[in-house]
Length: 181
Length: 183
Image 1 (cartoon, helix red, strand yellow):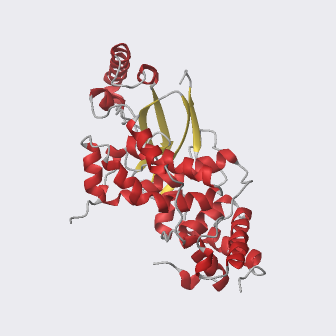
Image 2: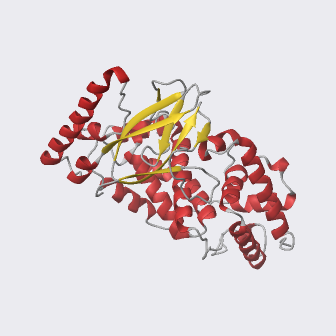
Image 3: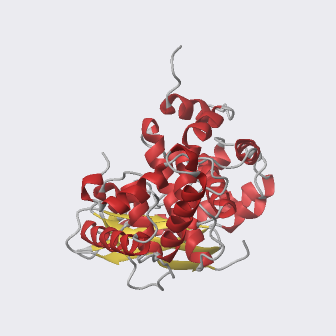
């Protein structure tokens, strides 16, 4: 069966087939949610940011100049939406555990150890300044190049490298006593 | 490719944990699709009229440009009276032309990005103004607060030195323009 590419899905939506947007949502939802959750720190804010980003993407779909690269275009919208939300909120109180149900922890660690480890990561992330948390997540979790990060964030590459380095240093300090067995 | 080789083993372990798949709660897709379906109809002449685009106002054509802006206002009023397909009439009536000017003598290209064009560097290019190194664009904006910045030569973001800075925890230097009127 021929796969419907993002470009084809975008074309269908622009032709009036709103249902084709469901394919784009299903395809890019989880990565977007992961980024928003780790940056904003709780499920509700992450879902709000993600939903609003999809809505913005739908409204602006005609401006998506490379429909086959819908993922990169959409991610830029999400990154900016998360910045707006994060700045508006200012504080990141009430951060949730990264794996509250322990659904993934059992794969590599005992549930109890995994729970504590994920909790430690969530707390360490929350302590990072937002610009460092953003840079760390983009580089080392979402695998975005520094050049792409510069386009996404508007910051220069050297500034971004500095943010990532400081984030790594802080995370290492915060997590050194939390290593799982 | 992930730059794991750059990482301290402990931080790499944390990054691996953060890369694990997570998904929004059940019903998320349904909510998004419901919100999308609730959007006004797209693609008609009103949609075209409302789409943000630069209004090119070369000095020689200034009078014509003013007339063009007036024409947009008149058409907007007509659309408000006529009513777009599912779009609130107030949105049609409220957009006002806002002029952005910045001096960047060394630039080859300057673009305007902001909350009004999804931060798309390709959406709103500035044109060289009457004075050397000065770049200008005029865009219709709805009343309210808009954050924006200039993108120089496709890569360097620049705040507007003549505008208030947006409060931002992300090291960004966006600017703010507030368009008066009821939104």
